[in-house]
Amino acid sequence: MSWQKTMDKLSLQNPVFATYVIAATIMILKGVSMSWLTVVRMMQVKGGFRSPEDIKKTPLNPEPNPKQLQPNERVERIRRIQLNDLENLPFFLVAGLLFVLTTEPSLLIARCLMYGYVVSRLLHFAAYFTARTHDTRAALWTVGSVILIFMTCWTLIAALAN
Amino acid sequence: MSWQKTMDKLSLQNPVFATYVIAATIMILKGVSMSWLTVVRMMQVKGGFRSPEDIKKTPLNPEPNPKQLQPNERVERIRRIQLNDLENLPFFLVAGLLFVLTTEPSLLIARCLMYGYVVSRLLHFAAYFTARTHDTRAALWTVGSVILIFMTCWTLIAALAN
Amino acid sequence: MSWQKTMDKLSLQNPVFATYVIAATIMILKGVSMSWLTVVRMMQVKGGFRSPEDIKKTPLNPEPNPKQLQPNERVERIRRIQLNDLENLPFFLVAGLLFVLTTEPSLLIARCLMYGYVVSRLLHFAAYFTARTHDTRAALWTVGSVILIFMTCWTLIAALAN
Image (cartoon, rainbow over all chains, first blue to last red; front, side, top):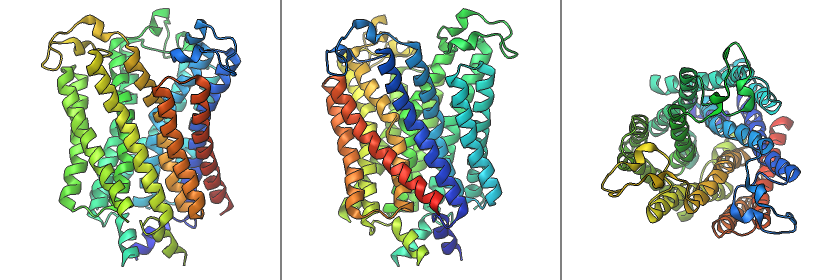
């Protein structure tokens, strides 16, 4: 019965949904980690701040200096990685959920797509973090983006065919 | 029975949910397309890069040049459009889903709101891409934003009234 | 029966879901408000624009001036607040939904986490808007981020333990 299928779909008893939940939560933790990594690097370099009030003297910044407001490449790199996440992860998080709800992928296909996406994003991070060439980074980004587009198109087609 | 309604709500047999899925997937594809358009433009102008390592010599960048790291307006325009997407689309994607789950809109109203949102965003892109005046762009942005606020308030009221 | 639980979970009759919907819609309205606040401030200072076409003469900009394209701190502050939202809210919106779907939190815990998140974000806004010290802002941001990480880890563990 279709209603039974629907409600099963959003239960962890549904291995396809469980796959999505694992992929989604890892990606959320990855995205949030970029904020923390930015904090760590700002504390390491004692700079890379952005707001005028950030050079007020405080317990965490006992010796403020106007130079602390200048862009710092070690901090800016993490911000660029984070921006790349923002351009990708929110769309994956919603696309994955709708994919689970509206298509009937086999568990194998769902795992390949979702864990493939996760792996591509973690490798993209590793390549960006260690300043590999633009070509390497672009190739890894492309894998994730193609998976995302593929899942989204499949979902759209399922909705239109309905 | 209420549980039957709930589970029906997330099935493509529910035309309101199908409307949401179509709108959401089109918006995801639109959002992801901005990344690809940025890539296309960076390749066209051979620049607009942001990371120091992007001017290393590679197969895709055989004649690197420090000028490639300078902002390029043709690329920056797409980045601005994409940032505008990030400020809007993720909120619409979640608001639309909660709207379907918690309110009982007629199919006509759901279609007007969701397809209206999609059309407003596509026209906003067209206006931004072709550098129409700020007034035109702002008017189109406003339509989408008002629809989003309307759906979100309706959902909040339904949850509070419960 | 598990299927009955699942479908109940996404109904407003489920107080944990209703808590999420209230928190999520308030956060969406907060996020969207930043766009409107940017508009208000751009109109107040008659500047802080970003696109070359924004200094064309129009009804809303009758006396254009190239200086209108220079960054304006009153506008940039709101943009920084908004970027901070984009780094946080979309992840909360999805994490909260998956948390409701996959864990069995008591209503008290769900309310503490979700309303705690909302309050931390509203206070973060107040601190950023009024230019409190970096320490104050960071402390408020940390509360929200820790709640988000906690909910996401709980969800991931539930999915892995399944």
